[in-house]
Length: 333
Ligand SMILES: NC(=O)c1ccc[n+]([C@@H]2O[C@H](COP(=O)([O-])OP(=O)(O)OC[C@H]3O[C@@H](n4cnc5c(N)ncnc54)[C@H](OP(=O)(O)O)[C@@H]3O)[C@@H](O)[C@H]2O)c1
Image (tube, rainbow, N blue to C red):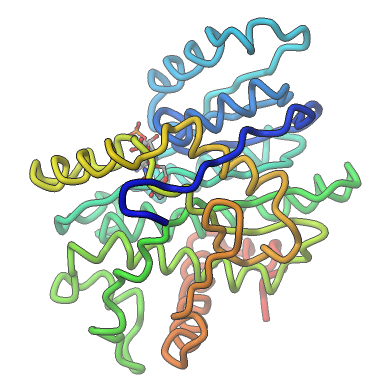
């Protein structure tokens, strides 16, 4: 990948259709999520669930989708539903998951796209969890466990595999764990929620590394022919992702994005590939655009130990917040 440019991303294939399918896109209110939602709607997805922070944001997103000329020309209309989801609040994540499980009869695609970055230490209101960790990692892990049974059941009833993709990042190598390893005797969650160990510049990459480990481990417990599980990085894309950053980061990243950033429409093609075209070899892997990007840290002794610890602590946290959900998702060892 060059400093001033990124490889060209081919358009989606003309024949690609999501007719008859139901998809959830988190963070559908802007950037990559909005662009991915539009791709799905343009390609006749039957039901599109916009998982957004507020009803108002959902209504705005829905109007944008319905105003699109391609969407307007469709003879069979997409049903667009708005479900509220705030990844910073575990009660909202739990309510969202319960609503989906109760109200949605089939789920073919779960695109966990929402995410954020922040250099500042902030904790979530309900659980005092460090915010970036909760939003980018923990809430996505919870959703993947809570909705896995529905994805599996849909694959069984439709005879076609379902898809679960979490949006990640190739900024992983900027993580802090090589320089500041988590001691063997320390809980990983406790470490990440301890302000003394918070390294703002690395926290985004730290959480995207955790996502990559989670997907890697989750895939070992999921049959790729039933639910394909992956993690995808869309490259650098011109979005609002820097909104929480100080002015100098926004300015610097804005300049770089202006030079080499993809438009959300182009970047989102990689997300659509991750939930429709990615091959079985990508199960559990991080796709850099369309091909496997090797996360070398996962192969190290430290990485392997951390992945096991992460898996165990995450399942324990999910089980305590939603008893029975781990077993229901068939994730018990
Ligand atoms: N842009 C890039 O260059 C790039 C590169 C690699 C990976 N990514 C990843 O791509 C994903 C999408 O980001 P983007 O670039 O499209 O940025 P964006 O325009 O800022 O979109 C982020 C989305 O996440 C939602 N979100 C943030 N916090 C949330 C919360 N607490 N609960 C629910 N939703 C929340 C936002 O909702 P609101 O509208 O309510 O704020 C928004 O819809 C992220 O996971 C990001 O890490 C981006």
